[in-house]
Length: 363
Length: 122
Image 1: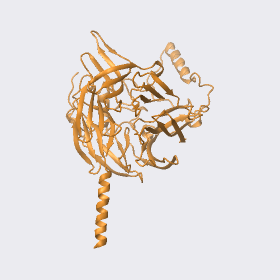
Image 2: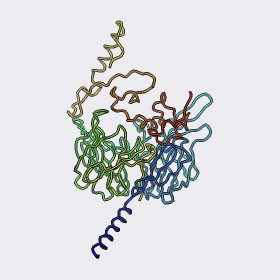
Image 3: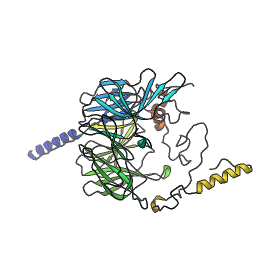
Image 4: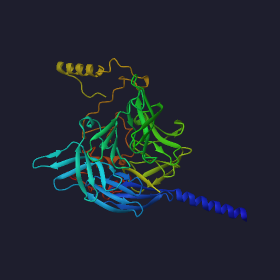
């Protein structure tokens, strides 16, 4: 009887651990809600209505206690308390003849301000005037844009940061824009403090280094870990590698790994920091082939590849405990893959199309 | 796929100029060395898809960027909402931001519930 008791105890303990490790996923859903998905149950457990409309981006605070949602219908922001899963603040930036377009952004460490890049649209008597994208400071208590700043001429080319990843240093003094380069801004004046040419100083011989998808997360506090594409200045041979960017002192390390494929998703780093995953796409349309790649983050080597049938558009994510990989987006489903074997396991039906806002995972 | 054919001398001259410009290397690239894996400027030409009922095909629901259908979302309903929100295909889909914010308010899953999408009369 004793072995059986021990066995049952071990089983119970195992179940408890499994349950404890399971996470809660928050995803933007059509037409105007967040769905809360329990990994352990494999189903949607709650729906949070968003009064300001359709969610286009989700951003968790550093402590993962708060989620900031931007919505497009009324150019809104909604703040969600993760513990209670309730909306604690919501407002639309639009007023009178003034409208805004923006997508994503970053909260300051105090949670009082939200930084973004937006376009201002003013309805005149006979026309609409559309501004260039500007840096903007949104006061969450006053529920309005309190300051805007022009983007420096030099940074106007390209995406201008409209959908780029934006981060704020722990002390709230600096804002980082990760785009075709790293632009470091003073959080008070929005003057450019530094443009970090990722090509040369820290990684001699590399040019035109750019970040991968902004959908990857911060694996370590105060750091941004991601995949980069770089090219040498001689024959422009593109290589990809893993970069670790220290947000506090702007130090940057880059370790090249191999020839750059056509497309790579963001890097998903497991909670233990030892393994990381991405999805690589080669070819186009009917010839498109997708593979999951697993990296060792200590040796910076590619450990394993596995091809999988991919959709035309999808987003790559990882479970909270790092044991499952998710393919989702442009549909109502999440395809679940085992992170160890890289094999397909199951499909979760969300019963609701999800938006391109991505996924926030909380424990 | 080539849909337009030059019929007179002027049109033929335009065609020659355009072809010559397309074949010429871009500024700064003629003396450059490019890794073999990049393929340089010798990339195959993309098909010319005529403008029709929509303003943009890149890809649309009719053809994808290569002129085929293999790159389209399958089923196409998977792609409806992202077009609707971003106004990417304004000719085929009501736009969420300006004119039809409630078009999909009764339809959570387009692939399953597309019959619940609202009717919009321009």
